[in-house]
Amino acid sequence: MCSSSSPSARRWDGSRASAPRRRSLRIAPDSTSRLLRCGQTASCRECGNPVEWYLRADDRLVQLHPHELSAARVPESCRWHVSCGIAHPVGDGSGWCRLAHALLCPARPTSPAAQQLSGLRRSLALRTRRLLDAGVLAPHATPAGGPPPGEAVCRPARPVVQLLFVRYLASRPVDEIQCVAQTLRRTRCTAEVLGPGALQGVWTLVPVSAHHGQLALPSDVMAVYSLSALPYQEQLRWRAQRCEQHAAATVAGDLAVADWEPFDPIRHHEHIGTRLPSRGRRPGGHAPRQARP
Image (cartoon, rainbow, N blue to C red; front, side, top):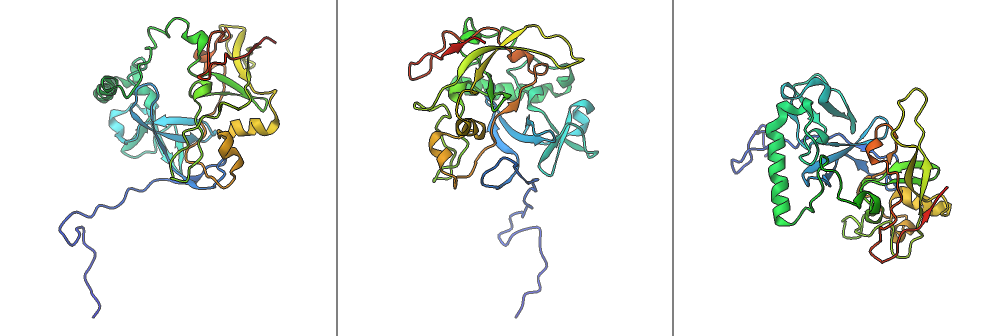
């Protein structure tokens, strides 16, 4: 005999049956596996709090707070929404919105636009303090105090890398860029793109030029980690952000989005270094090579 019971909001054991949360998916244009993508869960490198990486309409990446907030609490100029896997810097007219993590990050200066979100910022700061006390998060210099003496010269936290005649802003130091490929255990590869036997680029000083009609920049030259002298296939490996082992394995898919962000001298002016990292050393003990144009 067929059952004629209607769907209920509770399971057979009396527990509430909650509908799964729907998430927007899309295919990443640079994914070798062509897997459907949604927000890539990660942790902020500066404060350790969870974030979600999303692609914008211009293919740039943005870090969003992983939870939705009431639109009434967020200023209109700070609202974001996600549609079809793309993050848009505007509200969608509903009572809920997303928020860029940069406004809440305890490691960054407080923005005047985020005064209404001071309570949420304090809770993130408390979690950051717990991570620091537990030794899970390495302490970083506060933006107000600036980097430690010699740190900006020895090891840029976000270096500018030139490959395939395009300049990109890396999300971490050159020797810490991690492979994005998926291993056989379905975890992210822990190897670095700049492996022990990989070909190295050179640090060089290049002219900085603003676009026509933009404001003048504070410096005339900038330090760039150039990979232009490397073979074409090696530069493709860097842009795909894969280690030497997974660069040859075409069947391995990507488990994360590559961290490259197109460099803009106006938006990223705080990351422009005017001196070469002369005293920096890689874990293998080899000092980075230097060159001048």
